[in-house]
Every structure is written in C-alpha cells, then in structure tokens.
Image (cartoon, rainbow, N blue to C red; front, side, top):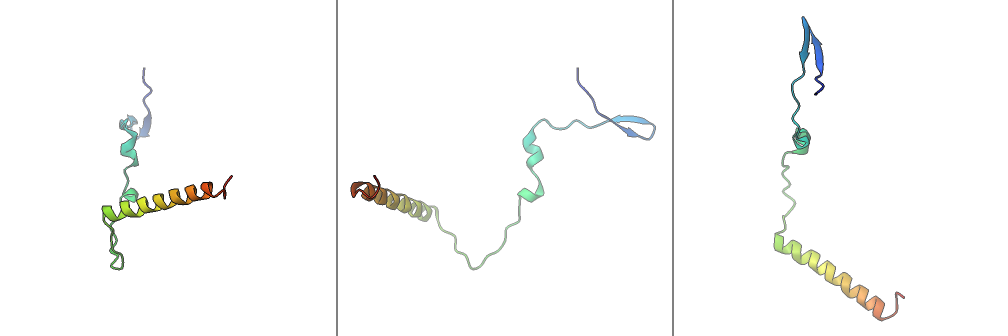
Amino acid sequence: MSLKLYRPVEGGLEPRPVQPRDWRTRLRTARWAPSRLANPESETAGPLQGVLLFGGLAGLTLVLLLLGYLTGFWH
C-alpha cells in the first residue's frame, strides 16, 4: 500500500507527480556547476609537477621525522 499525496486544485484533488527515487538527481543544480573563470595570471601545473611536489613534501616529512627520532628530539 502506498500513500499518495494529493494537492488541491480547482475542481478537486490532483495527485503530485512521482519524484525520482535517485537522490543524486536532486543534487544536480546550477549552483554546483559554476562557469569557468578566466585568470590570465595563473599558470596550470601538469600532473607530473603535482606528483613531484607532493612526493617531495612527503619525502621531506619522512626525513624530518626520521632525523627527529634518531637524534632523540622526540622521545
């Protein structure tokens, strides 16, 4: 048994249209798709540069942690 919601209209009641059951379709609004903005001052980095940057930061962090523990800075 299902509960149908009816809205009042002139001349009686009219059933509401069936809402889609997929909740993802309700999330797709215009506000989640902003238009592209032109920024002539920025330069995009390639994927290799991003991997090298974050890999270098991770390596530097590892070296600092190892040096800190080996020298007794952290007990």
